[in-house]
Image 1 (spheres, one colour):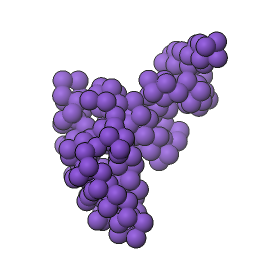
Image 2 (cartoon, rainbow, N blue to C red):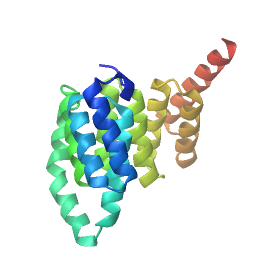
Image 3 (tube, one colour):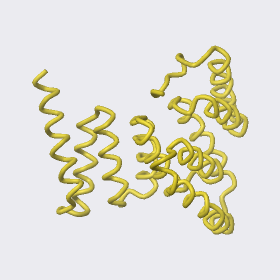
Length: 197
């Protein structure tokens, strides 16, 4: 299954997506997030709905953030992360669903965003992987592994200039990082090929 636009969904889901957008615009993020989750249950490859769901989740989370909840969430999400990671290779859809559940509990969970990105790459949804890794990098901008994964996702999504930039950021942190150097070279080749066309 390839990544989908809202216009490619069936009419019923398109209407739900419009209702979710309206709920979000009317400052009802819980309703928007709930509608988005229902759509994504049926069509997990719809990136614009996923972006709307994340915006709603972040709005909800900012309204109820406290120190104790961070500790409780960290402890309670560990089994889901482990289970999702173990299934990544053989069952990427299951790993993807685990990451989604974790992010619905805590949209600031960088490990869950990383798992979402890895599963999206395994499912050949590179723009969804870019979305996940960008969100994770926004939360932890100096994490080398996230920058390297982001660069690879950009490259897979056909965005070599962005891939080169992410690789450059990774190399700023570790100038000898082999994967970042490889991605930087691959991005340069892809940009050269694009220009020659």
